[in-house]
Length: 187
Image 1 (cartoon, rainbow, N blue to C red):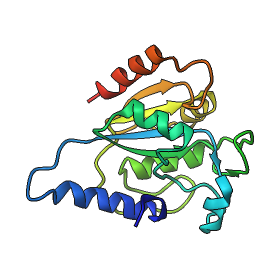
Image 2: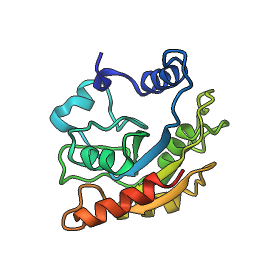
Image 3: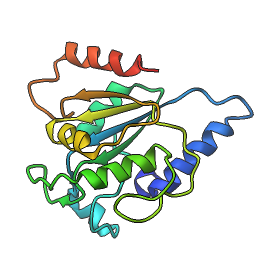
Image 4: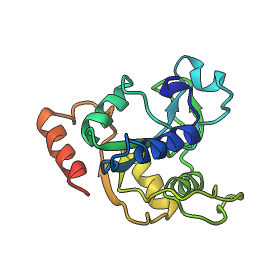
């Protein structure tokens, strides 16, 4: 089964199992990285055809996606990367944008960061013992404004603001190398 067909819960359960069961050896230390992007593009209606009417709360971005390729390069091979969005709507194309939703983003971060309790928008955080986020990448202006408005403070993460991974004319080779060093040197 490929990563693209797994639900977010199955992805995280598989990661935890893999960490514990690597041939009886201690699991290597992986950095938990969460990237906040702006809006999820419903490319070829793949997300909506899977039953989603809004963006999933968190997901694994595909390595061949333009933003995904850059994010994986930045976080390096010893990181587990999840993505959440500042906007809950699914956009029909890369030029479309959703409405920033600080309450929804704050709920998503509480879930991913393993904080228990009741969500501000209603509902209960799933009963999970997830490790805290190590690095929180806040990508682009919309995500940065929405993150500040959501008021969530991570349990242990170092928060790093960067340009959106798909931004043009910002990501020079030197800028990528410097940003990768900042991210990978966080833990």
